[in-house]
Amino acid sequence: MTKALIVIDMQRDFCPGGLLAVADGDGVVAPINAMMYEYDAVVLTQDWHPADHSSFADNHPGATAFSVTQMPYGPQVLWPAHCVIGTPGADFHPGLAVDRADLILRKGFRAGIDSYSAFFENDRTTATGLTGYLRDRGIRDLTFVGLAHDFCVAWSAMDAARLGFKARVVEGACRAIDLDGSLDAARDGMTRAGVILA
Ligand code: VGL
Ligand code: ZN
Image 1 (cartoon, helix red, strand yellow):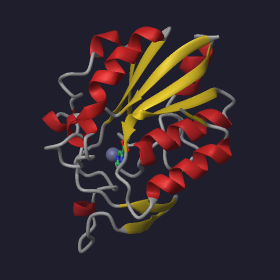
Image 2 (image 1 turned 90 degrees about the horizontal axis):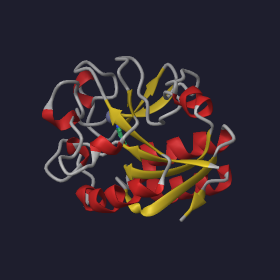
Image 3 (image 1 turned 45 degrees about the vertical axis):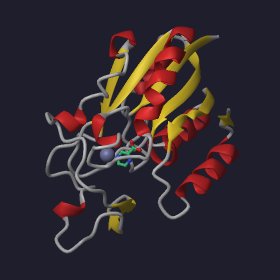
Image 4 (image 1 turned 90 degrees about the vertical axis):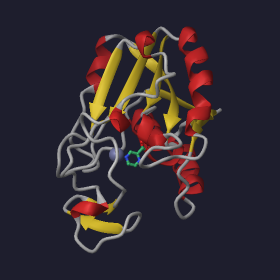
């Protein structure tokens, strides 16, 4: 079976010193680079938001970061501004072996809707196009790594399993935000969706 490594959001803003830093986020760069050689295809995702993005707390007067608001498509965590298009924080971590990637998929570029998953935006219906790309290449076996374990990695892996891909998360090559038990909840959700946690 053709196998792909899907590297989620390994960007400066999710690493120490970034605007939405995940603890030890940069600690997974070296293991991910090493894993890239074991796959037939490598896909990188890139969180890619306009400055007026509706997931940013700053764009909701009076709201604090990490609170939850109601969006037309459901509940949405309000984040500190991060991965703004064209800023250094949106760049990949400088140590990531970006040249090994076949595809770089950007997500979250619509101001009115966030996109944790690499497959569907947070309304759960707007497709990013990744499903078609993988199916057209005959890729059915997916391994997920990157940031953040409990948000974009988990949502991507759960969607992959629901779409009928073989979906595996290598937890040692992920780091979590862990907001109010979100890592345990994400692990639970992934297991129930049929994702293999390795
Ligand atoms: C992510 C929150 C907001 C992630 C992206 O990559 O997990 N989390 N945007
Ligand atoms: Zn984001």
